[in-house]
Length: 312
Image (cartoon, rainbow, N blue to C red; front, side, top):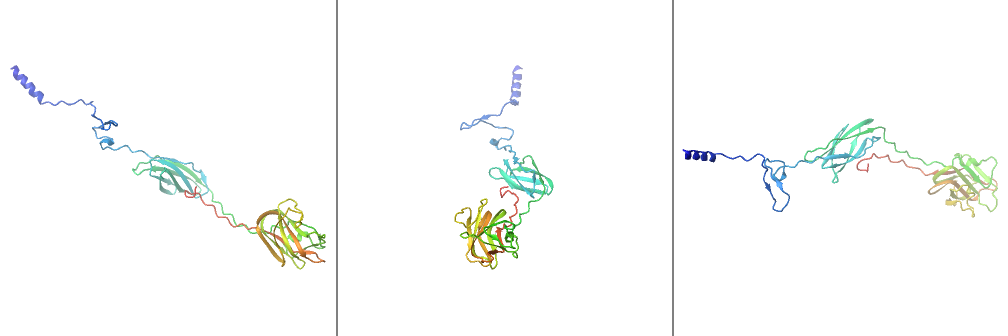
């Protein structure tokens, strides 16, 4: 009887399966090259070793300092990213995107709604669909770009200048006639001392950048003249061998009554004519107008709005 019970116990034990404890760790494998030990997950988890996928890295974005107010209709906004392929920008007028450069930098020319504080949002994204947090910016568009400066025409800088000469003004004439802008009035002077070069000098009301001198004269005009410029205070008579305060810039050998001497544009405060012969024994030298013409200034190009492409 005892033998039969033992046989039954053996049969029962042979038909049972022993379950391993639930807290047993997965097996450890050792790489053949002695590298890092990898635990082999038995649940198909997130481990590249057994074909799982790695956790994606989220992009980040930083926007550079941006003007809080601008007169321009657009504003270039720069920034930097990490782990991003492109940047998406949303503003008051729409949305746009730009690729990220190799160094992670980006720039977007953002159009602005006029006379409005514009709210602008930036997000960095990558090709896997991950997105950064929103980077907000506010910029007020107010005012208009400046108008280009208009051209400045050439003007007679000798008008109402102070006149000096080394003769005696004729009766009925006036020194001011040579700079009054009226060719109908004539400045005439004579009685110049012997061995002295007759001259007419102007002290302009302000320094002018000039490039020509024009002399209008009648029958008693000088045969010729030389033109001198000076920036010295009280430079004295021009055309004298012992006076180095003047610089000769040109002259006319034979006058016609309407004579123009051109020279390189020069900023000066004093202009002088050294006369050469001519005139008359009765009236001396007669000059209707001594005109000093400033250099014209062309219209300036309009200012250009700063952009990503022009260094804005």
